Figure 1 (cartoon, rainbow, N blue to C red):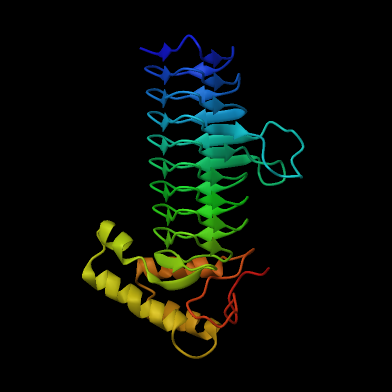
Figure 2 (figure 1 turned 30 degrees about the vertical axis):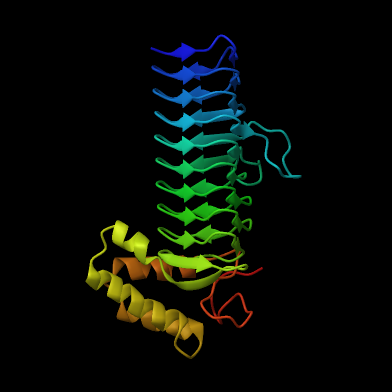
Length: 275
């Protein structure tokens, strides 16, 4: 049975599912859809064209579906869609999309967003992610499934972070981070593979060793990066995880690739992605 506190303000037109709890002093706008079993603990603000999936729990002072923090936004009915079984802690903020960016911000299922983390306009976030306290995304970022972003880290707009990658705390990410990569530092550099994440995803010892060989070929051997990329694609053509990394690199468009060395260059020779 749905329970709405007497001090909450739920606008006419809001679609509230079954077994939803809306706590004290919450504000829910007229174009909001809240799925079955959701719980808004207290003082939660949900506005705009926002849809929240079933069983998501939202803690005090979270603000969802507010207009994009973009000078290009023209007031359109853009959207925010949040998946099922997410946990949004205190003061989390998520913005709707912009007209020029596709008009949609999406968050997958089972995301854990710690206090004061932020998802900007037109971002697309996979499932099973963890954003630690104050982790922040700029607009138009793409975050893969199972990504972990450490506390006080910030990701530049249009940046991609691949599946199961990890970003360390207090890191500025201005280049694409490969799937299964580990990036950290004041300005993010690749430090290797996210071995903890790989083991949690039940990767076998053999698969991890293959990924490490591919990583060394791509980022630690001499020669032009484009040649090393082609060589790795030939050698590991049958390895799904390695080919996922190679495809990710080849599909880069907006941002340079986060590197493993410390030369001060953000983009390997021949890699996709430009400033």
